[in-house]
Image (cartoon, rainbow, N blue to C red; front, side):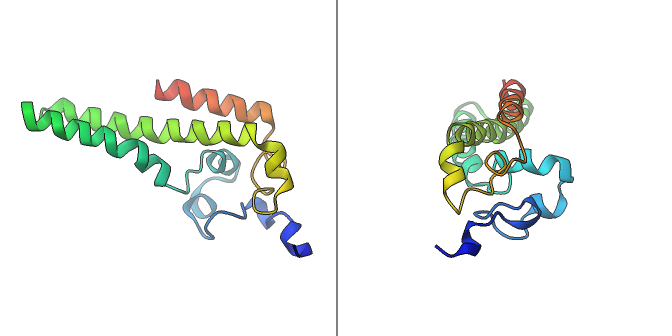
Length: 133
């Protein structure tokens, strides 16, 4: 491992995130560590939760037809998938904080780098869970 691989990313960026992602470019600076905890810049986890929900809606619509309320249900599923994926990633970072601090690729994540305390991360996780419920 080279010495440069051990240094945290500049400006609070996360080493394993794509450069120039929307969180780094567009999100207000105070919200970035929380959006990084939620992996908001990486949509794959949200899609993995959301697509089965939408598939179920499509199957139900094939039997009973579409209703206007189905659009609200689809939107609620999208919001819920995004929030619960974020809560899960936040929980992962809380539980893996010591391990993340010892690995070059993950030591610039919000908790090991000191951008967010464990208490702040727990509050963020609970907020996401409550909003999703």
